[in-house]
Length: 289
Image 1 (cartoon, rainbow, N blue to C red):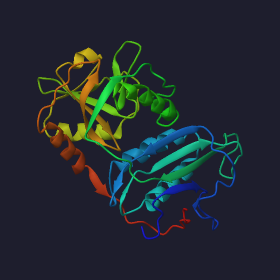
Image 2: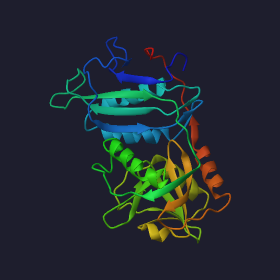
Image 3: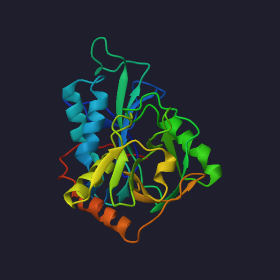
Image 4: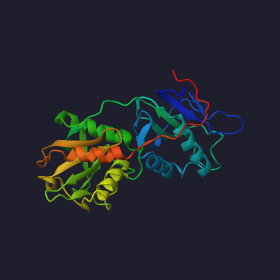
């Protein structure tokens, strides 16, 4: 969109009565509170995968805190504010506040919505993984509250040479990556995802890939598996940022394999899910410095 900032933090102020939707000044609070919900996706030259699913997931997370009318207006304004050129990784956020805003309803805790416009960080097609030393999640079904703890989890496995930590539950069963969804190919050609009985964030990228795989005739199963059960399997680590990364190895874990050309097929599935952003409508976007 012409004039849209490519980087910076925009705070939501609502619409109507001549009030601009966005401001760069956090006018009702001097400090950021706890992160209650968040979502992010990659936008490359105005094209994005699964934006409707990302916004639906974020909307579901914030509805207990914000009225439905504002949820809809915020999502519409976010889509309009997204840059149409370049490579970006924006994030929407709901944070707790210490001071109530005019948009907090009676009896509701003080919260604030924002859009964080960010350039896309470096990405990769392969990653070394390691079993997480523990499961720090307190809200396993909501993206946002545990992001800092999950980042520390990834940091904990970096001395092992790993770029992603694989979370297992109290039964030792694979659940998800710290910042990723997981699927793996068994030697018989079945594509497997962790059982839905294991609480985890509903990965948009994983859902898009599985939908495309099913349409392409791939046999798909959901199953409980421990790390040793993946011996001889090909493990894919999926996220909105990287898309599809192949796990090149699992530190002190199963022996993983890679079938030539299979990851390219998966990336083609994800590429086919890309859609152009709708034309932006006129919004009053402040300059971000």
